[in-house]
Image 1 (cartoon, rainbow, N blue to C red):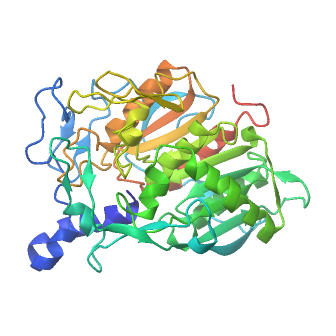
Image 2 (cartoon, one colour; image 1 turned 45 degrees about the vertical axis):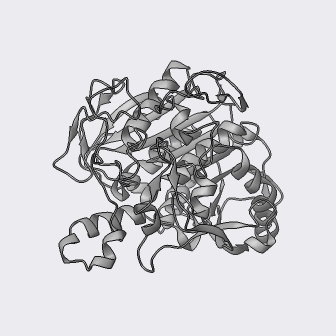
Length: 442
């Protein structure tokens, strides 16, 4: 799910009464508790926890002091957590941009190189996914979809079929880059001309922090998504799939093109490589490091989609990215068990959560969610696995239990992939992410 969708949701929800009948499918069937959802029995399948939710807003506003969330330190308005601190923090409600988020005339600026990639030239993603939505109706096929009988977690999207894609890749090269040296870098999703976040702000932050010697001179690689959003789309296939495929595609097909087109040399050291993303690409950023800590060990994410978005439905991980932190909450039935990076048959009822059931990996993770982040936007998915804020609170819980280095920021007065929160926190987030550089992540 992405921010462009969020903007459309808010606009359409406020004008639904004026819409012609054909446009009704553009609006998600729910932006609150789905009709007929299980909100009363935590022991029954697909329970949706409504504790601490203010249902008068759309989406509901979450209480950061919900007793079901991990305890967090609430900071004075305008203050951010120290780059030397780990754990859970609450910020806001005022979000003023940091000085590093804007360009300064006395700071050297990096250069940006762009090129386009096409599905015909790919090996791993040569056949893409295209979904037949109604023209000008974002995600209409998903918003009107149904689920497999007896399994509210398995969405049916028959409008999806094979197709082609093209994408832009934008590469920021810092002014201090010395040709021929192996540069540290950060890869981020939802880049290129399809970007729905402020790439220029990221480049400003890098210019300013590199100039102040708070970051190493690093390359930033923004990779456009393959198209559309969520289930049945190429973007959803790339970002929401819980496997090593996307990281392997980046390694084999994108990074060689970056070096060829920009004449930079990229480091092979996983501690000098980072991933970053927004919404589903934030989930992908974590997945890249989870399945390939040999390639990436630093991760930054805004509103990570740690929910049930993987499509096609995977019987080994029926909850998709939700199962990084929590068990699949569906009806009792034999499922394979996912442990670490392997899947094996089992007679248990639910697949095991990945993080609690795997040895701790050398991953350092900064992530954020808003008090008005996404909540059950598709009415058919009353699956107990589509609360973005709860998903990230549970990520913080399991990361802490396993002794990971992480910083989780709960942002008051903030929506999904919130622009103001990004401008306020991105410099601090990048400093925290790289603060022990060049020492290896413990």
